[in-house]
Amino acid sequence: MLTSLRAPLLLAAALAAGLAALPFLAPHDITLLNLGFLTFLYVAQGVAWNILGGFAGYISFGYAAFFGLGAYTTALLWLGGWTPALTYPVAGLAAAAFSLVVGVPTLRLVGPYFSIATIGVGEAMRILMLNLDRITGGASGLNLPTAVPSKGWFYLMALLFAGLSFATAAVVRASQFGLGLMALRLDLEAAEGLGVPTALFKNIAHALSAFIVGACGGLYATYLQFVHPDTVFGFTASISLVLIALIGGLGTLWGPVVGAVIFYAVQDYLQTRYPTFHLLAYGVLLILILLFEPRGLAGLAARLRRTVFPAAGPGAAEARAGRAR
Amino acid sequence: MFSAQNLVSVGIAALLTAGLYAIMSYGLAIIYGVMRVINLSHAGFLMLGAFMTLVYFQRWHLDPVLGAFVNLPLFFALGWLLHRLLVRRVVTSLPVASLLLLFGLWLVIQNLALAIWGGEDQSIITAYTYKALSLFGFRVPVTRLIVFAVALSVLAVLHFLLGHTYLGKALRATVQDPTAGLLVGIDTDRISALAFGLGTAFAAFAGGLLTLLFSFNPDFGGSFQLKSFTIIVLGGLENLAGVAAGAAILAFAESYAVLFMRASLQNVVAYALLVVALIVIPGGIGSLFSQNRS
Image (tube, rainbow over all chains, first blue to last red; front, side, top):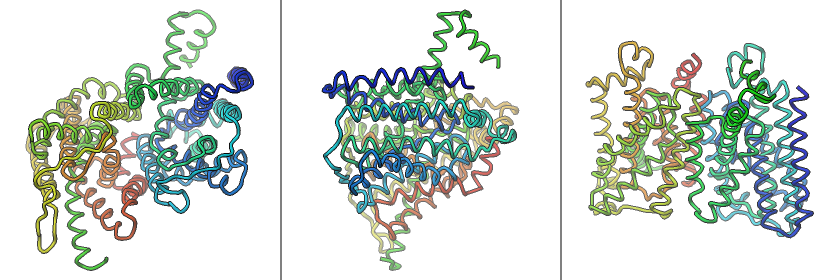
């Protein structure tokens, strides 16, 4: 168990250490720092979403509710005089608490019905927030203080979030809790029969990922210095996470990391040139993935490795052993 | 606000809305019933149906009601084709696979429409758009009456066809028990294609009718799709007759809720009802669970 945990964590730590040097090497390259910030923010959220969506197989289309709640928690506390960095854990806790309100009833639903319910919850939250204009500023949004840390600080903060999110997912995956989640994805009743407290595990996974996404929402609010219900609670915020995990590989550790990088690169490239086409590209990608390689890029990489190194080397032996098991 | 006059007039509006809701949700119910697939691209077909109706209207001055009927065969063919090419390949794998595939299809349709027609709101103004009739002293917009009447007659015809033709009976048999259907010699794969075609056709038909009442853009349909989910969940998901009941419940709940809350919160009623119905109502949900687990 420990060896399966150590390798990805070491690799991730080395990668993060390398990336952390960037703000010191190029402190004035705002474009690059922004690019890094948003990519890491997506990595953190995609990896977090994958804890419930990938490991446990409960596909939620409602994570915008957590992102938005985190963003507004930070926004209101910041306006109340808090230091932004101190508000992120509170933003995460607010989102996690809300995830229990949503999750305790809805996680009892089987697969697709849970997904449908989360769309309902997410949209209901957006409309509620638009209408609670005394608190949220409603459709005009909330302007936040303009005194913010440097772009380098945001870059490093997002990198830290991505790293913590990855570490959380890695620890979950290697733990008995993670095994429980994967067991209940494969067969809920069999897992229950073997003594996995499925309802509890699903809710913990939900709350854990909601906490991370909520904290990310808080960080995003400080970065943008503005919050609006349609952006932070928008359906796009929810579906991005689904797409990231699916592109990269549902339920894998590195899948959402790669997925987020590709997702944001495509978005950044297409959005500037053809503003409407990036969602079209994701739609096509999603269809292709589901038709030909449901395990996403991680599955594609495994398939490539098998064709390039057929039945030789430790990787192939491991893969075969994995399949045999 | 709560005068008898007012309550009755809200009731009439709710009844007329129920007709629209029923036709709008029928396609979703038929696909779910036969294939156990939740069609997340329903909104896309509603929207595409509306835009096609606009195209007929602009090119050939075709009335939107007739346009909705033109949509029926066109979108039946499209749905059939999509079933052959895409949906059929994923129905056997994970239940969420078809959900996600159709979600991808929705993204594609939505953004193709955005590329073709742009993001502005469109509307179709006919000679009778702003006309109203006086009914027992209540003023009722003509467009709402037309939509209600057309929706009801089409549903009646469909109900008749489902009850009195071989394909209709085969379809209903598949809804009740796909395995037993297969055992008595029903080509369930063909019935699935038929159901997906019908579902797509009815979504586009409803989209055409919606142009009489609302303006629309490529994002159009999302809220209607969620309402359709609410309706078929309320109606028991696989019970096609239940769709009418679900449509009526939602329409009345929404219409009367506006008397107590802001109109902009109206959609929350539908979404809250969706979540509550999914969790609480045992009628549809109970049977659904047992089928999914067996």
